[in-house]
Length: 378
Image (cartoon, rainbow, N blue to C red; front, side, top):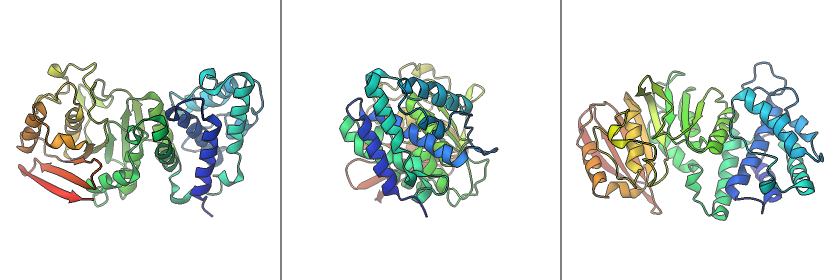
């Protein structure tokens, strides 16, 4: 019988209660999800010779349980559990389980971590025999935590993840379900967050595809890598870094191009040009279309997507609705895009949304040198 999501969520909520008050919600979610990850991979893959993830001897959930009640439990978790798992699986920027400022010190830290581990000993969370309904463990858990804690942390949920409903729309818009896909088909998200959008696109494809993602925030990129493993995409390549200033996916001196590119970049990023010489961009992202204004980065991400598409590629990007009517440099870029000033035979979709119940979609196809705007209701 499938594990009920209600049981999983209840356990996650209880575990967050153990950390409540010690740190911001955007931070303590990392501790909870790392423990969930350790529990899941230990249950599913411990002792398997050809498992998609390596669990070093002494670094399983059972070994984690053995540390309960020890005075130096935080330090032992870091050294005996986190470090071996991270090194063996190329995981990075894992949370520090020995951080006194977040977890308390002495007896307080020992009890807090001991109780947190005990929550995941719940027999209902035995992943060796069953999986959660829908088989979307970390993705659902991540979305659940963000939905409940975004208000508490005073930050927008969109900063951490792309809502499932929006991800599904994006996956459908690019038409990957009806495409002739294979393992050679590439999907890229230049601002991948926890990887939820990439995974929704992969789920929409008729065959396994190859996933690439880059995420600026170090901790979030680590969660994305874990998310890929939990969703049977262990070969997905997730890297950390600033996509605009330091794109990691390249072919020589040019940007690597992909069959599909999807993104939910930071809205109106005021620091998008930090570390970037916009007038001499080595990847020529702004040469054909113009340079976005210094404090409005929406079109910078969109132009990066256009440059990252294969000649037959398709892309979709979520941006604030202001990109459709703001003037100045953005108006010039918009006009150039819609006038077909690119020779790249690709199609892309710009999806904007606000609190309104409708989506305004602008789509263009340089193959036919035609442009069309269509209003699509949600």
